[in-house]
Each structure stands twice: as C-alpha cells, then as structure tokens.
Amino acid sequence: MFTRKRSFLAILLVIVFLVTSVALAVDYKYVGSKKSKKYHLPTCRSAQKIKPDNLVTFKSAQEAKAAGYVPCKVCKPPIQD
Image 1: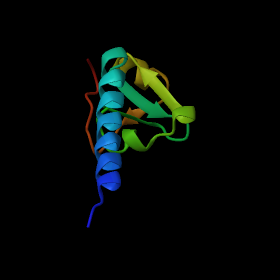
Image 2 (image 1 turned 180 degrees about the horizontal axis):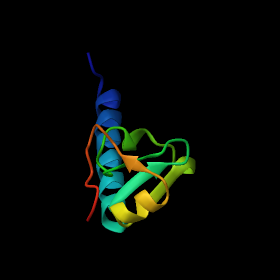
Image 3 (image 1 turned 60 degrees about the vertical axis):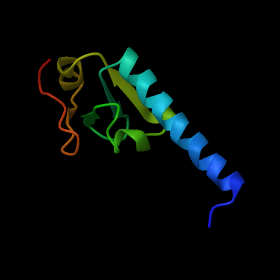
Image 4 (image 1 turned 135 degrees about the horizontal axis):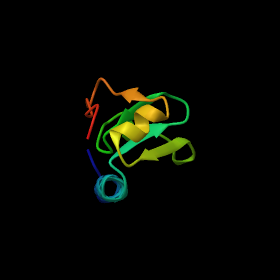
C-alpha cells in the first residue's frame, strides 16, 4: 500500500527520469559509458543506468563508431545517421 509520501516520491522520480531523457535527446543523439563500448539511444533502459560520471555523448553514430563504440543490442541505434 502506497502512502502519500511514497506516491509523491514515485511521481517525482518518473518526472526526473523523463526530463533527463528529453534533455539528453535534445543535446546529443546517442550516449555511451566510459566503462562499456556500446552506444545507446538516450531513452534506452541501459542508457538510463549509466552514472553521470561515466556518461559519454555522441552527436552521430559515426562519431560513436570512430570512438570505438558499437550499437546496443537492446535499443538498436542506427549504424549510420
């Protein structure tokens, strides 16, 4: 059973998640992690787990590929833009 406080926190968490996703999508097309060699769409569930300290951004698939990253198998970003 949710209390009002838990419900409020859950709604707030969803809003923060959506705002972060939109902000990333506006500035960059793809994201990756310093600890992985995969690039993702900013809305990918795997991308959402990347810690801010490890976040790498790319403006194009070619940029990600040139940095040695490969497409995520979950969100399947394009190989070329």
